[in-house]
Image (tube, rainbow, N blue to C red; front, side, top):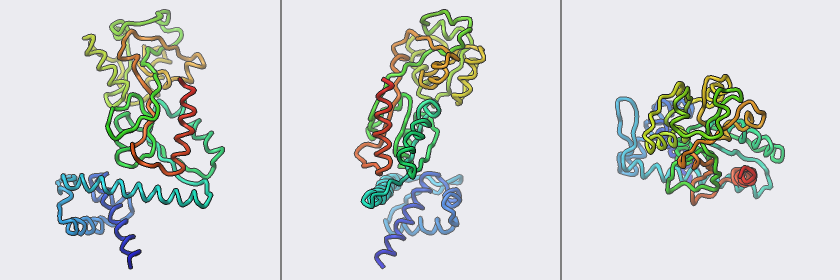
Length: 305
């Protein structure tokens, strides 16, 4: 009976976590392949057991109450601890299996992360990966929610619970085609680079946060020809000779190495302070596979310096 009760408690924790994550009993049921009514019953039963209302029932979903926020932190810790326990038991059995969950910005996928995963799996072919492409802010959100083990972002927001294992300087630069009309300029000031057609990321990107800050400091207006959430669109804008894209250099590393694009520095202390951030949730032991991959990633990122 104790084992059955433990299993039932774990199920309830998973139901709670999915409802808290999605803000919807219906969506949680679809994700878990469980009837919405069953999840609703378990949430109500849980609230009765803890003698607290954990969710506000809103017309368009479920929102954690103050008590629910506290309980959610306990649930995330519990589920991560159970996942880590399973991974450590596998290690004791000398098994090189496991799943590594990564949240990363799009600009680091093709140039860095995909080759890194490929190289890692040559040594550990039974390790699987879950990769979520996210904005810099969402990378840390995924870490805090326990849905990612490792985060890779550009200028990730500073948060107490996030540990930055490595921060590599990578400035925001003016990216353009080699034959673009301003390619002979060796260094731009911000006002000049923003006079012509320019492409920039949307506000959820770490690059954009730095750019907005630099514009506020210099009182230079920002009127982009293209504003997008696609790094590929920013690359294409520059490649096609449509103007200048403002990107960190690692987002276009392949194109810079091949000569398809060139990068010119911008005279701005703010923009030169950009960093690639490898981060995890602080004070939490990683599952074995994730820990192994983190060490591997740190070694590779060291060569970027």
